[in-house]
Image (cartoon, rainbow, N blue to C red):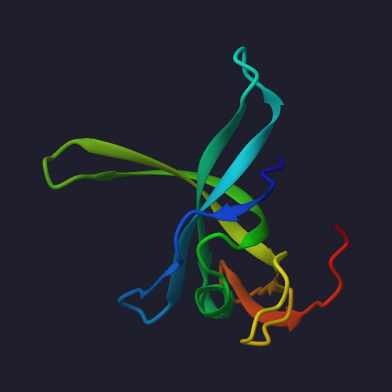
Length: 137
């Protein structure tokens, strides 16, 4: 089976970095991704996709991504549910990122244009970060 998704879009707001009770860094952000076709009014439509990354990649994204920045995310689609405070079942669809490429030019912070993670056998999420200055787009 295959569950893979690759998106390119702009962040709708600054990423939110939090830490789980176990101390794992978790960053959430939303990408605005334009559709490749126009609607019946001749306008492009945009989808707003929730994304989440973990550990070192989460900290890097929180430090170097910001509202309006162009980024690519490569990961898998996850659908989960939880019970809200009102007792109603809520569903969340999000992209769990394995790799994030920073596609906006460097700014004064000197951040490289991309980071990627490689899976670790010991944990279910990415644990190692390597720099990759090569942007193939």
